[in-house]
Image (cartoon, rainbow, N blue to C red; front, side, top):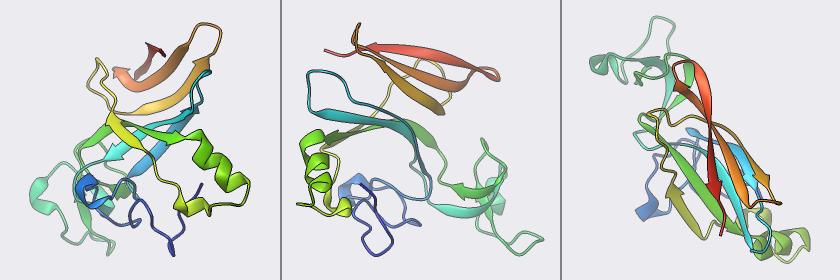
Length: 166
């Protein structure tokens, strides 16, 4: 699936996350891993979701500068976790998007367009460390385990979380 600008099924690129208004994805969303557990129809996408107001510009920890111009002509975005120039929607959370594999197969077969598929559920991924940054996900079919890397969980070091699929 994909969601081009002409078909923003999950929300516009510059939209602010709002599940009640069916905005589930935007410029501050990053998918970092996908798993397809054996024995089910769910394809699980793991990533980061900015849930604050969307902003493109220079990140700053100074809330009073938010949406004001920078010296280079862009704007400041309040984001104490990321000072880079780019997309921001502070704060960010770890999230899972669950898609029905049969819906994805319908796209492959030409019965649906890639932007007509929506996740049937989304949820925040509860992780034990403060960082919401997901680095990737992998699936161990032999043991029914999903491995999720949580970046910056131990200072600059990642931590691997393990979940059992039932």
